[in-house]
Image (tube, rainbow, N blue to C red; front, top):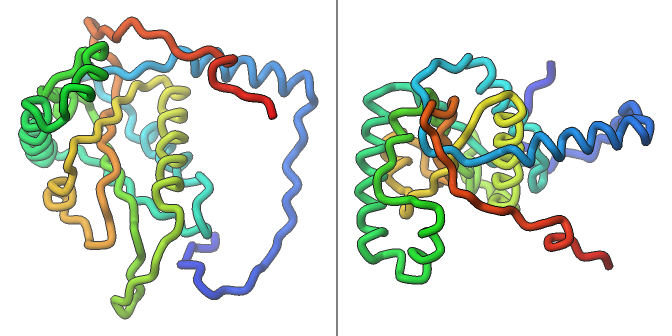
Length: 229
């Protein structure tokens, strides 16, 4: 298997692409089933302690890593955190930042927007869920000489990748919670990440607790999100 190396200055090398074409009727069945299954996805904030097969999580990360990216630079790092002490340190630092936010840093408008979700500064999911994934975006890469080279469309690329991760987790029967404490610099410090990486999100993964509840929310209809031009 060929290994990936940074693609800077390499010649364009096209290769044939001939995926099998799914017949229209079968494609419609697949699309309708996917739409129904994904409509059941919810963000869960209470996790069971039940173990999760690690390979399921690894396969989901592998799916995320197939995402398109600017100049094919794949500017993401997925840190899989299982060490209890590390997770406790992440929770402690995250809750400290969250307390500051909920005590005034967010502002009244933001707090009002969060109110229907029932969130607060307590983040038990960071230690309760069997797995944490901390996603870092690589703003640039460092070559073997230590010189930096810019990555392009980093936010867009990492956002697409995380979306694919959440889809893969849900379709594999797992629940997830995307957490973005602000600021997130402490994650680089706790996890010892290099200077070219910036924390993007913390994702808790597992099965929902027996007494888990979710907000009674309604998603926008297709008519509300699509415009034909």
